[in-house]
Amino acid sequence: MPFKIVAIGEILWDVFPDGRRFGGAPANFASSASELSSSEDEVAIVSAVGEDLLGDEGIKALEERGVSTNFVQRNPHPTGRVDIQLDAQGLASYQFAEDCAWDRLSWSQKLQDLAFESDVVCFGTLGQRSIHSRQTIHQFLNHTKPTTLRIFDINIRQPYFHDALIESSLKLANILKLNDEELPILAAAFKLTGSDEAILSALCERFDLRVAALTRGADGSTVVAADHQITTLGVKAEVADTVGAGDAFTASLAIHLLRGMELERACEHANALAAYVCSQSGATMPFPVHLKLS
Image 1: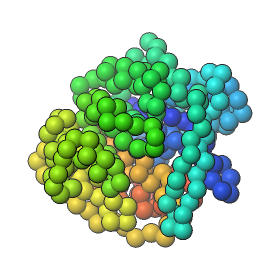
Image 2: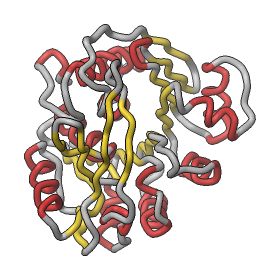
Image 3: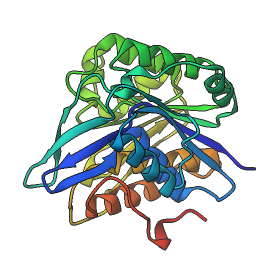
């Protein structure tokens, strides 16, 4: 049975020291999901770009990656961009342009219909930095089916988050994905202590989550579900940059869960895919055959 996979939030251009590349966590997720999905599946993004050259190029980049742009709105505000600096280890720091097109995402009947048809929706905090887009994203999530996988890939970016936003997003989600820098922020927000696994389990219980996935970069990942916990070792890679690796991990996990595959297999593949993305420059790229999902 074909699936409908949706990302909702920001579209922007990553401006690296050596040039700009198309990106934004939802776009990265959608591009990776398109690489991994069956040809019968539909992968779409809900966002907005400006009536400018970067908007034209962004839509073209999505279509080249097999992502439907039928739900990409256009408005007079500029297409988003973020200036990225890389340290000696390839780790990225970000400076985001303000008041961009994706901050003006508007609700419509067209989005309501898509929400109900969606099998997966992936969202984060950055796309909710404006109240206008936040309300649209929350409406979208509220109009999904009970069976829809609603993945909160928290993707914290300073200063565009606060405890109330995280809590309201967790209440709308049934799957959480975060990294080892974000876990202490959630632990502090909800006064949770103990091991990583204990904190993940407490978050699952408090917010009725099906799965909580923690990525640790080169150290692998830990995934907690209702009936078991899985810790998977990382895959060695010569890091070019880390941009998009977490989004690829999330896309792999989402498709494995959609297909009802074993969680351990899902974690192993997601780790391997994230390592491959780290070994390449930029956030999205074609995947080698051995990392495709049959």
